[in-house]
Length: 561
Image (cartoon, rainbow, N blue to C red; front, side, top):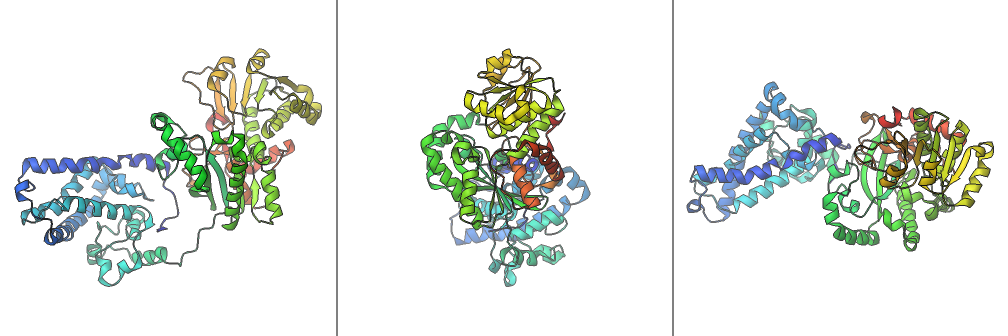
């Protein structure tokens, strides 16, 4: 099937449509109520499940359910009913399969009364059979989901000759959600054509979407991510739940209970699945997508698995090249120094194969965003402790902060790499101090903690003084405890105007994008044809921040305040 509206529904819609299961609960209750109040569906009135009972079922639908629904639906689009009830459903312009059952409770009850005619009418004529119930529910739900799923599910032949008057299409009902005052039918457009409410572009849209006349959607930039943890490979994928995908990663009780099953699936997925599309989206007209390697972060820490993971990254880059993608952004551990030299190995392979795709680690913008956060929330006399101080981003931050006048406590156990950092810093190296533990940093009066590598919350809680600032750019990010005495901000989570993008997939912090993803999008939009791998140049940070602002990215509210 082909997508009708090339846009994702907003995250607020996904949350609102969690009421989709109302009719599922109400349907059996409706049968119980009918059985209590009338004799129409009782065992002594049940007939054989033969062709005549099935014919009676569909005759009742087309002759009774459809006309009543059409009249009721037209009334719902009147000003009074629309504002009080039906507007809830039509707040979903880009529909999902579950949108078809997302209604206020009183509206759902009215629909059930309408749809019950499919059983009651045959019962009144002695043609009710128990087979009608699962048959009608299965057919009804399939038709309803097809009409709302935003993919064209009906082939062209279903619209040939008189069939178009009795079978709607996914495109037909999609127009009802974008044009509102047209295409009112349930599944049978006959009354729309009879009453003049069939939209004149219905057939043309179906032909365009189901045919080959619409230009293909070319992705310009992909962001290559990986699983946070084992349960996220199941729970944080759109095939499992678009709602959970729009929220910040949380293992939760279900993930904890199902951990062993998730682990088995994670091992299987790592062996057999390629990089998988999590979501396609646009940013100010730039076609983007997030792909995910089916590898949980914990497996990257196993040295024996790293060569295989590196080959998976290379295979994903090859797939991107074959698809005509211009830029590939590497997320989190996919650009680890010990995996591919911070993207350098991947870049060298691309150049050796004379591929056109460009590799972007995005560390320049990540560093610039964290530095901008610190500048807005500190004074030069504040003492800053940087964890991960000898990694690519950490090294650049230490130098930049030292140049600003901060005493910088470089928390690292690698004395040789710290010595290299001091030499690279030049005159600013005098402001750098080596510390080996969080306790040592706390003893030297750290006012600001910059987290460049994963850190347990209890460690920060134990060592950060009350009122200290904690600026995080690690993945996964730290989650402060309720009532934490330190002030926490995520310096690498950037926000943008929701009108600029239809992205709903949550990469790390809800309602934001990682700075390295924003960097990949900036590369695609500027299209300078450049790779971005290797060390971060401290002298480019101001330019990177201005570049991000030009493209609509800014610090999140906590970091900007």
